[in-house]
Image 1: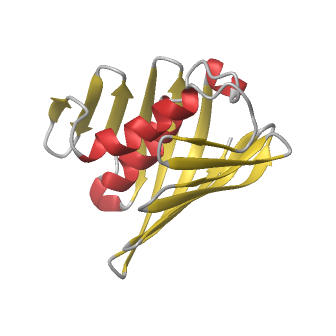
Image 2: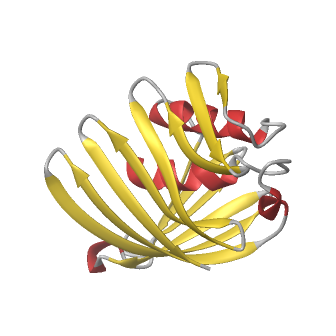
Length: 167
């Protein structure tokens, strides 16, 4: 769940950014997520539908989670489980807030230049965000299609997550 939250908030908090103009509109992407958390490998595949006001994620794999729908907006998150035929609404709190706050800062970046903001360093190369360095983690952005990242890597002490995006 933390992995999904990290990915979703990465995009949903960048709305109306001067540095990330593609987030002013709508887009869809297929995401392949490969993670290693505490030496346990996991793989997930999901479809993402993004708009400036919300992001929806539909789990395609693994079979155990297939059909789950996560919806994120500034007002909170909703999880629909088809197996339980239940919808759960939650506010974004706890672990979500740390990632959410990082991405809120990204949306306020005025220029695409390397800079320090808070306790994080945003590293740009040729006006493209390449890396975010913080005390406890690093986020790397690699390969781009129409100025959208196609590979994102989140690394901390016990977590490594690679996201491959196809738009």
